[in-house]
Structures are given as C-alpha cells and as structure tokens.
Amino acid sequence: MPPPPTLLVLPVLAACLLYATPARARPSADIPTVEVKATQARLLPYRELFYPLAKAVQQRLAGRAVLAMQLRPVRAGVRTDDLRLWLEGGGEALPLPPGEHGLFIVPVAERIAAHDGSFAINKHPADLRANLVLVPTLAPDAWTMGEVRRLLQDVHATIAPLMPWHHRLLMWAAARRLGVAVCSLSPSAQVAVTDGGQVLARYPTSEPLRNHANAPVYCHRFSGHEDFDAGARLVLPDDAQVLLI
Image 1 (cartoon, rainbow, N blue to C red):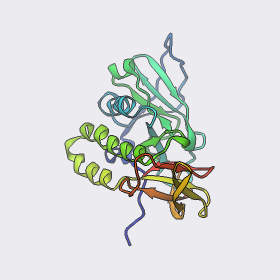
Image 2 (cartoon, rainbow, N blue to C red):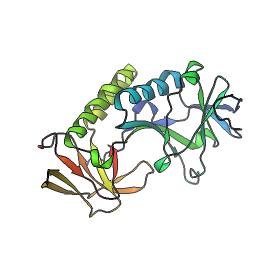
Image 3 (tube, one colour):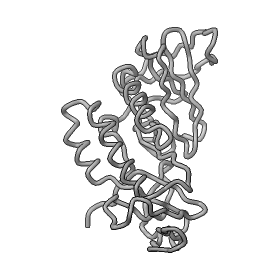
C-alpha cells in the first residue's frame, strides 16, 4: 500500500537547517526591532530562494494561497510552542508572528532581500527542520471546482520556473499528484458539491491525514479532474481546513 500523501512541501527545503552563527539584531527606524537572545539560523539565502518564491506567490496566487515556513522538531523533547522567528538583514530585524497551526508567513521584504538577509530563531538550529509550504487562503464560501482547477494549475506554473534545475523533476512529480483536500476534525463530516440549490454529490471526510501542525485530520481530496462544471460550488464543513496535498 503506498504511503499517504503529505502536505505540499517544496522539495529543495525538506531538510535540516544548514548552519548557525551568533545572532545580532540591529536597530531600524521604521521596522520593529527585537533583541535576539538565540542563534541565527541560516536556512538558505533569502534573496535567492525565499524572496523570489514569496514574491511570485504574492503576484500570481494573491488571495488564494500564501507561502509559509513550517518548522518541525527533528527529535522528541524539542518544544515549538514557544518558537520565535525573525528575518534580519541590512540593519533591520523583522519579527514574523506565527499564524494558524504555527506557520510563519514568508514576507516579501525588498530591502532585506537587497542585503541577502537571514532568519534568526530562539532555538538551536540542529533541533528543527525547515519546510516551505503553500497554504490556501480562499474564503470558505468561494471554493468552486473552477477555483480548485485554477489553483492547482497556477501553483505549478508559479513554482516550477523558480526551482533549481536538479529539483524540477521532483517538483513535477509532486505537482502532478497535487490536490485540494477539504479536511475536518471529524471522520463523519461531509463536503457537498452543489449547483444552485441542487446537491450533486456528498463526500465524507474519511481519509486520515495530518495538517500543517502535524495534528490528525480527516479529509476528502479533490484532484481537479472531477466531472463537475467549473461553477459547481463546494460546501465545506464548519470546521474545515483546506490543504494542498
């Protein structure tokens, strides 16, 4: 039996942090500053990967998805509930507040990108693994089959040209299997496909998966190839989480 699908993780970043140097936070006149009493974790050069990916997602997928960083412990006993993260460069320190499920949205910071920049964390870098993930942000009542298909097509068109050549085959394989999963905390919840007032289909959220916080959820996955008109609307469960997997 093949393993269950995982969240869309850009393959070039599915690795541990690369190296650490002593952290410094320098004052800035117009960006909030912090004192970083931690280590500075250089994941990958901000200007060369994080920045162009975040900017491309902002330009091509605005309102439908954002680029976020996911930091997970590599061993038992490493706490992440107190994790703090900053982007530093050119004398500026930009704190990144954690969002839903502990994800950190990757900013489009032009001035920091001009100075390369790096990420600082209040943990030892060897204790964490960094991944980049795409998080759908479309409003719950805005999901249609057309939006599902358009998002899946645009994700590949946005990300693939920015991948290093030696990762493109892996990215192509991941994108080819990519789907939009509607998830709930309940295995008996349902997602309906409707056209006007007519219910065309109901699907139970019965497939066990893991969300961005590595918590168990139950999902139904849409591949975009379902035989419904583009205007058919998805009616999501009240506690729905929509994931790209």
